Image (cartoon, rainbow, N blue to C red; front, top):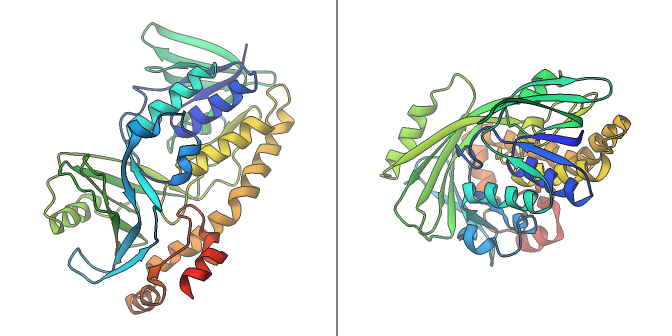
Length: 358
């Protein structure tokens, strides 16, 4: 019997598998298709991500250094309100490569990572969990003491273990222009109701364009207007759900969720790579697979670290919907040099940010 079966080999699932394996646990990981594909997440990440990748991986994953953002209340030709710092704030990275590097790290730590395995059933019993998967050699079933749902917004583990859904889902789209762009600023357009659109230069790998909308909005029309405004040539695009706001509970009897399956994302951007990996580390540290009572320790631990950031993130997102004159006033007041961390809204009140403002 395995200690853990992990469903999903994205950043959160692979990070949990690595951390749990390093603690001596027997870990089996299933990924539905090819690891890293299809791409459904932006490759714009904070510098903290390098703490989680294997030594030497930065060189193969790094695409561009980002030092600031230009905010717009209209299209590309509208007035820009720059926010920047004297040094890198974030990086653009090879998003597919990141998933694969994290999965390799899990495998190197001792986890059994299997791609091309679709989980079809999760049976959560009193003493064990049975996970059934369909792979290249047919259907197979595995018993484990715990199952970890790292299987994204449409989590099968969450559904079959009767764990609540995240608060909200947005529909996001990404598109890529292959023309190289080494500029150090991203562009953010507060032109999407309740959210925003973006342009991220990725060095020799081109430019990423994206936006997210509430269900029922015309995603494709908004995206076409965004890219037309930049005269972009989009050679590939992808889309998917973005969970916003964690569920009221992320654990079951012998199950737990990490990453997008748990809604562990930033409400003001929808990004969840760092939050998911931080939560995965909490899970590996606190959960004893032989003792389901320890699941509550995981629930408390990740909420203690991220709860304030998520609440403040909702407040930041609310600013996207205030009337344009108030947005303009706020952007004028705060534009310029900043000292904030892109994953931590609480840094708006940090000494570094106050020094940058005054």
